[in-house]
Image (cartoon, rainbow, N blue to C red; front, side, top):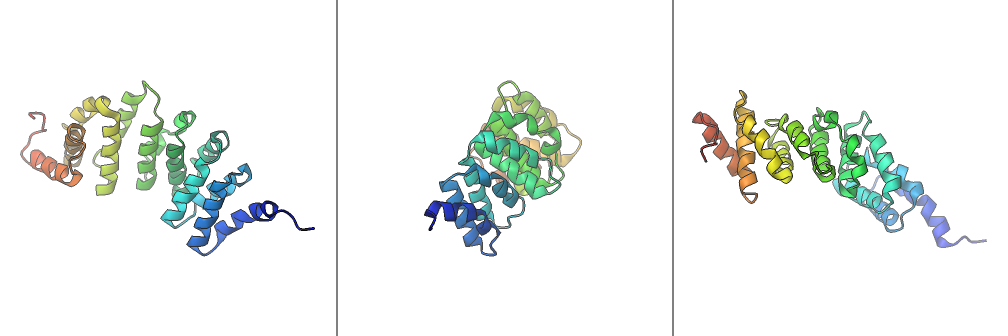
Length: 222
């Protein structure tokens, strides 16, 4: 007897996630997301940890968001304890897209200060998306400890996270403008500029901040 098409195709879908072809993996992830099935959540999460193609990773995240958060969030929270940096980073990214604030306690200080820049950047975005009302000042304080970190993209991600928190970031940024490390001062001043003018170019804000620091001021006169 020939089984209905859904019975033959659906259980085989995760096999496509192991294909050597990115296009096959992408189509498989799209198929799973189009017809969500809780049986495939583990396979989606596991593939996120090792998937090398950005477009496929984004589709895997989309497929996970199509499943009930009651199923996906606990599995993603477990993944935050993985020793693999990509697993932590992609789990955080997916949690930020799902937006279920029950995941907030899992976005720990250790993740917000993770030694891997991609993990930390994903944690910053997730934290801003998930932070409960009243917890914003504490989050701003932790984020401020990362000022001056990394290259341009990392610093821009942190600035965007602080700007997204709004006025609660003002005191920690003001304090950071007096930090003994010039990189921290520059980053804080540039972020202050973005907070005042979110449409300002980050590169210009950094160059302006460097001039202010070189002049021996902290930018507060403005």
